[in-house]
Image (tube, rainbow, N blue to C red; front, side, top):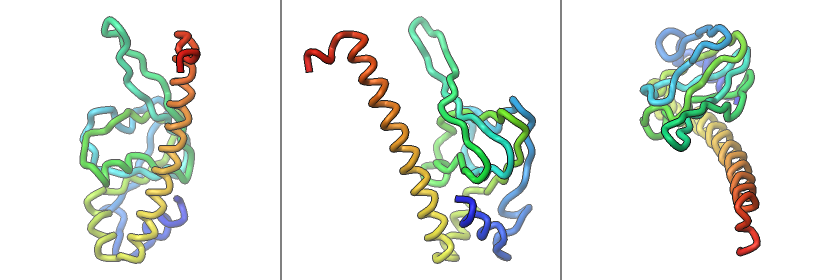
Length: 157
């Protein structure tokens, strides 16, 4: 992902301060929280972030497991480009991080105006989303198998 976004950030029509900005986060700082407005896609320049879920268990108990860790060159927050929904998870820096925040509306406008660059960026974003979906499917199927075995239901299938 880093190669195509790096090229985008160097494009003279996609400028720092107007279309994107750099920011730093200390370890344990939240980049954003589940439910926050979603208008920015992030590229990790340095450091590691953790995607955190908010899960409600029985009797109103909540847990906040880490879903996955992302490292330099990876992106997060990309769903904001496609559905304009609130953030679906929280993201916390687990080490000091340098991030590039790309304004979603500015990015889409740029990609419309520059279709060759737009195609390459969207293709890489979709590839990242497909990889995450496949990983999520593997985890879901593993949890489903565990649940079936834990309740003795696999013998009835």
